[in-house]
Length: 302
Image 1 (tube, rainbow, N blue to C red):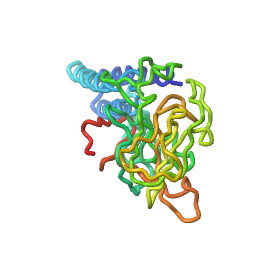
Image 2 (image 1 turned 120 degrees about the vertical axis):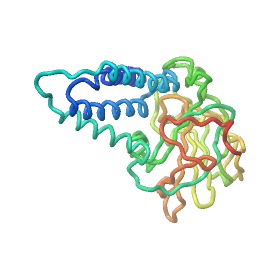
Image 3 (image 1 turned 135 degrees about the horizontal axis):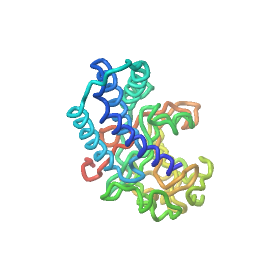
Image 4 (image 1 turned 45 degrees about the vertical axis):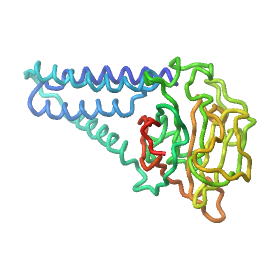
């Protein structure tokens, strides 16, 4: 799956550059419609492309290449005589990609109820591997136990890579694996689990019953942190914790393809298990983050 996503990102990026370079050929009407399509398509690839499997900074190289391709189109534009081509397909795809680009920022869940937490990782540059305001950016979480606002976090190196390989069966090749997890809030530990083995990619076992985890009762809401490293949990049920206290290490237990920290928050509701309470949209240190956005801990207020 990882290699398929990498291939799709590269192919779509190249196709986008080709479309941009050809966007101003044809009649005036055709040029306008085609330009709307190719710009919306290029921005879609920029936002949703799985650049992190190579380097997150490649998205900026793609943005620069897109501007160059557009300049080439401007300087080489020409009116091509002959039969008019249908504009319905470009109009349809322009509408489709524009809608997806808008929903990247707005999501499909309306205005969410938010909760502000301290960022649970320290000492590096991190990425929202999955996350957002419901569909389409949080697709994998959307139907799973009400986790429509859940966030997955991974660590990056200085080159914007999440590991030493595009995809590796060695857990230590992932920079996130073994990273210390800190409590994002004050509260009381109501559940822990630490004995489950970490999956060796690409194998994975479905959670949550075999996901190493910490569940915190933070008063009006519950905070769940999952996919923790085997035997790394430092706290016990009934313990009181404060924000910034070490809890465990990032692992790859449960329904996880590669090491990452999963975090989700639910409002406490009488008579309901924690995961059936209202899902809350997470902010870290007063700021919200979306799919594939970076979080530099050096710039966070603590």
